[in-house]
Length: 238
Image 1 (tube, rainbow, N blue to C red):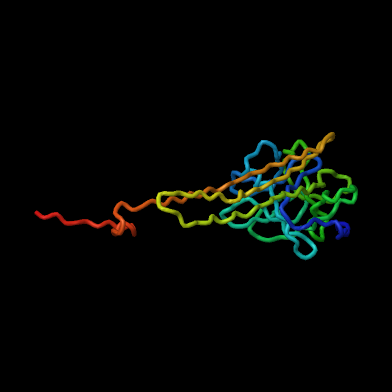
Image 2 (cartoon, helix red, strand yellow):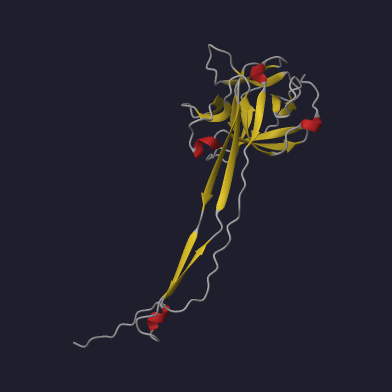
């Protein structure tokens, strides 16, 4: 059985990177050649914005545990982290079916963002695999207090959206134009990584600005049907 939780330092709901303390790599969803969706670990460096999404996880409180939802897009809808079957050395996967994990603070450290992922009411916890197996592989194994492969850092993905202000269409004089610039939408992602000597903070900002141009010009024949966008044709005799 896993030790009792300290509820005062449980993680809050939100979107996180889940980084292994031993390998310094993050949990991500992998498409396998067999068409399965495995959970493995990979470096967060040199990735595109879409690849970063594959490494992001939403923690959703559920009773005394958490639902762990992948932020990866899927034709099957929302995906949730689980294991193939309950047992030692079982593979960790994602499926459309909800499961709950018991996330506990690691009491061997003083840092509130270091946790272990327990399968409720069992001895099994999430960990990376030792060599010579691929170190990026993630399995569930029996709880060992001193095993760093079973310790994970939760790094929150901070997104700070600023809502667009709607463009205001004004009444214009004929032959004039007006440009309306919306307030920019700013999103910011903060990534914290740690090695033996340094803690590195990477802050990425993306700004999107919308520009709307309205032009008003006189019709070719004022008062004609072309003012409403229609075209009048006059028949020509034989």
